[in-house]
Image 1: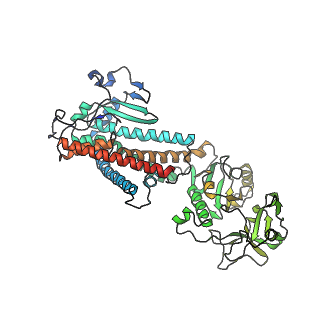
Image 2: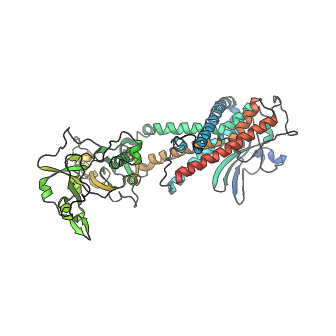
Image 3: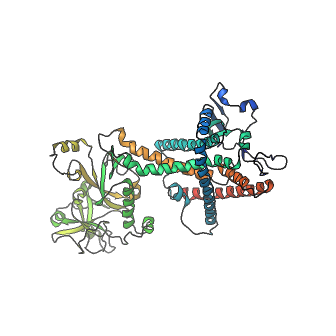
Length: 557
């Protein structure tokens, strides 16, 4: 409903009684922000203009009158069904109001250090982590937020308008506004008509917006759950994540290309973008046991074992020697440096203080990592078990070599497929249709590479989707991702609108619901009701500000 357009009347000389009022005083009213002549309160269907606009230094709005008659006709035609529908919404909105009040008490208790609980309401309700490291918003993200806000706000105000129409109250106009930099919408009603409706009817009108936002959240959740089946005729879901884009700033730029499939990380198959994020975080937790991820996941094995490869001794003898350039040891030809590691869990990754530089260089071998990763694995640093119950699986003519890398970085293998590349398509055409050759075994369709560095930043540096098109790709490749983003953003924005409008604060739906609820109870006299309402609203406003400041502090600082 219209924000900032409600006016309440309390006190002697301002209360009136209507049919069935029973001395309970006036209901919450909605009145224009400026005096409106009686002629202007008539139906705007008779006006020659179907819209109007106004603007000031901090507020601009666009009023639409053409929807007044259709909304009234819709509400009256199905009034019995709408009243039942919005009566259910009253129960939900009142229960939500109580739950939100408990949430505010929880945040207040945490602020006063009465409770020592680590559960963040921002993460629980809105789906984002309190540890926000990158708050950059792209142009596409801004578009998703704008569209989801438009959908959520429209459904919210549509609920108020249809609920009022089912009670025989016609909207004066529907307005879209921008206050400072914040967009919104409102539905304005004739306050004299609202004044005459029964108290429970007023509750239905005030609770309709929150109820519709809750329904939108349920629809979005169900859509996300069923989206793989909805898109099944056109897309394959959950087989391997497909690359949509690799920014120039990504460490994977030049290694992966759009429409590539990520097959595995360190030999562990990947089926979705979430598995990609979770697995890289898990590998990082194994490499650095003191990281936050390891502390939060008790299933992660303790210990910092080494990743090794069973390298033939013949290949080791013919390896390139490490060079000393400007007092820095380096390998030629972009080779990687490896060192022998015993079959036990003792690590030889770092230099021993007693070893001379010559001895350390003699222990180091420069090998082509692209060839080494094809060999059998050894060591205790792999998430996937590589032993057969023995301490070493390398044969007598092989040695277990572990890669050397800088402290703080992690070595991982990434296998990928390029099923849509020209080379792969040509190879597939040459294959026997009856053969069962997979993409991972075709040299022109797959490959692997090694990444050494920070895994947490790596996981967020590439744009992935769990959907793979069945036919020739193009703009349709991005359709599932766009749908997921729109539905997800709409879910979060609708949830936020429902929670914000359920707060016991001034100028929002929570104020009207509280006042109408107090009027409906009939337990208090008008003056007492006014005092109780003011106390609740001031307390709720202060607690909401405290909760908001806590969320901002945990998110940005």
